[in-house]
Image (tube, rainbow, N blue to C red; front, top):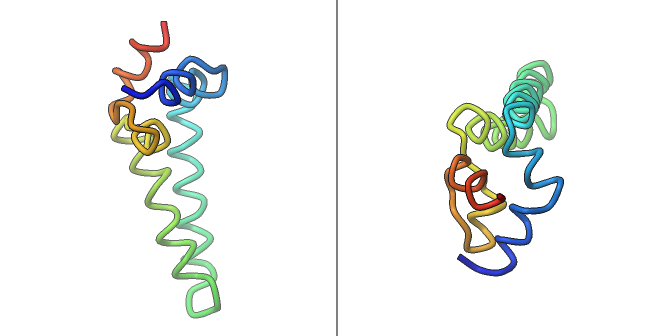
Length: 85
């Protein structure tokens, strides 16, 4: 794992986003983006909202951290939590 990913996972934001409260937040945010995309159906940006909503929704429901993975760290939220200690 890279030092940058370790630093992120140990930061207060990294610990919060991988906590149960962070998972709920990501799930709710994903649902909100998808709902906004459905409400705006046919208008500019609606497809972008739908596509963007998939990221936080999948991150929250599947317990993955795309930020950590993009920094060459672990993808699974549990592993991020274990390494944050």
